[in-house]
Structures are given as C-alpha cells and as structure tokens.
Length: 120
Image (tube, rainbow, N blue to C red; front, side, top):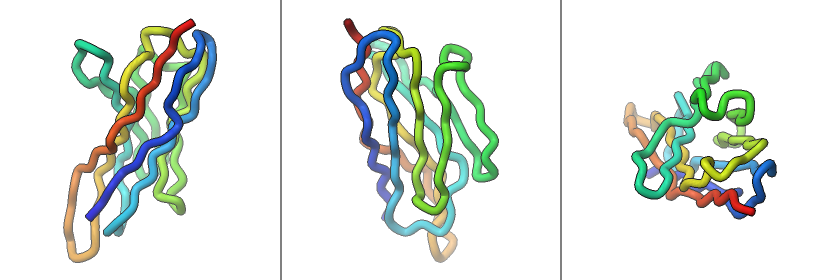
C-alpha cells in the first residue's frame, strides 16, 4: 500500500556533502513522524534524525551540527542534508515513516536504503 523510496546516496570525499531524499507514495492519509536511520557494516541500525509532523527535529549526537532533517509535507518527502561527512558516516541510510491511510489503517514503513560512502 505504501512505499518509501530513497535517493541521493553515493560516494563522497571526507568533508563533502550529500542530500538524501525519501518520498512516500501509496495509500497516504497523513505522515506522522519521519526518521532517518543508518546501518554501517557489522553494526546495528541506529537512529540518525527524526522530524515530527509539526516540524520538531532531533538529531543523534554524532551528527548534530552536521546533518539537517527536513520535510515537505506537500510532496510526502523527507530530506537529510549531510555536511562535513566523515568516513564513520559510511552506512546504508534508511528512511522510516509512520503513515496513516484511508479507512483507519496504520503502518510503520521503511525505505529500501541508499548507500552513502565517505572515502578519500
């Protein structure tokens, strides 16, 4: 019913920037909290940033001051602007959203992930 599709990942040198996008489509009545997670090789998935439907944001301490999460409700899209990227930021980045649909449905959805590699 709902799919989240990420884009914007790639290879970047340390100190560089990338902007990730995640667009939701399908049976969407409203999108509540949207989040970005990441999972590095051999590590567990961790929360990077979150944004509520009202626009309140929270970032993990490791990315605070470097990453900015935002959303465009009209486009059902969440963004993650990543600046001053470092090798330790290398991971697969996943978007996540709690979405209500018509008829009272509810779901916690995940994107397929997009690879971010920070290397010289």
